[in-house]
Length: 84
Image (cartoon, rainbow, N blue to C red):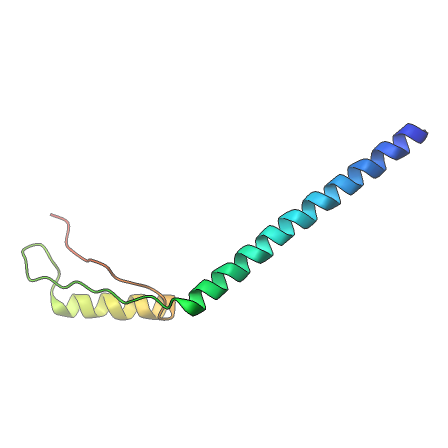
C-alpha cells in the first residue's frame, strides 16, 4: 500500500507540474501577442488595379469596409481580384 500511495503522489506532482508549465506557456504567449500588437499596429495595404480581372472601386470599397467592421480595424487587405 505504501508503494501505491507513493506512486499516486508522484503522479499528482507530475500532473500538476505539467499543468503549471503549460499554463505559463499559454499566459506568456498571450502576453507576447498583446505586447507585439500594441507595438506594431501594422500597415493597411490596399492594392487597387485597373487591370483586367480586378474588381471595381465600389466593390473594393464594400470589401474594405466589411473587413474593417468584422476585424474591428485589425484586418489587412493585400490584394483582391476576380477569379478568371
